[in-house]
Image 1 (cartoon, rainbow over the protein chains, first blue to last red):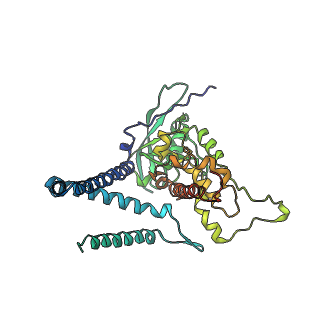
Image 2 (cartoon, chains in turn purple, green):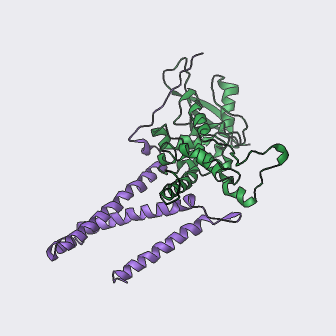
Image 3 (cartoon, rainbow over the protein chains, first blue to last red):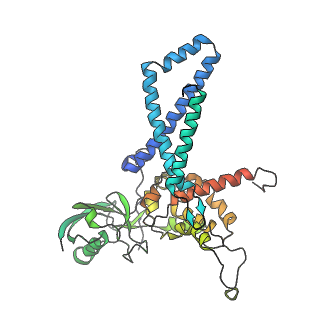
Length: 130
Length: 247
């Protein structure tokens, strides 16, 4: 008897709308762009600083404008999504075996949060904020 | 024993009659302790003998009855009716061609599984008289989780990367490669590397993680693939160091 297998195609652009877990994945992938955009804003800031006082003041007024502040909030939110998503995934990629046991996932994730907090405090001290 | 009537919407595809799949609804009075497989067996025995699906052990061991139940890849023997509403949609595993009804064509998976050499490659072959290849409990622990795979292919059904790029070797095969690479008795990592550490191998994975979420045996193929990525990246960079070997 001849065979006639039927191939169902996955829609190339809308596949991620099919399940909540794919939407979540897309969100934390897209959040990487927010981190990239913020890096760009900071690099532009450095560049403007090099151009002199007036240019720097212009950049500063942009980032402290209402639009700049809303942008900060959005980027901060997406950065949190990005960071927490990847921290959560660390125990899968990094298994630490001690004898016949593995270091529990929450310990590894917790250590990442501790280091994150420590680095943040260090940066704030450097910036003269804390 | 409480019963309720459940409507099973089952995807049908009969290659000799149908040009494309369609849904057929069966009304079945089901005891609450049934699993979806019991309901399908009832349909097959009492209502419609033409319905085709795979199953064997009925106890999450054989990996035969994988299907998509209400949009989620599941073993039909592990999907309890009490967890579902009065209408249940049952489809064959996604990302595979449909042979007939709920039966998929698994040739692609079998070829990929074979390509990663999923067997022990010892340093020296021993005869039976020479005894076992010994291993400590800690060495066993290092790979045991990845040895629990039952080849049910739910992970391939959940993996959008496999759906979009069918050349991807995929979660279960890569997790099994990792299982043997992590085995202290095995020296086959180099022999598997060309397949595993290729673009169609681990680097095609974008870590959606769906494979690990649907795995009925908690194998965590996504984790295995990320670990292989790490080892492979370290291999690549150390190959640039003096005495690091050929690239």
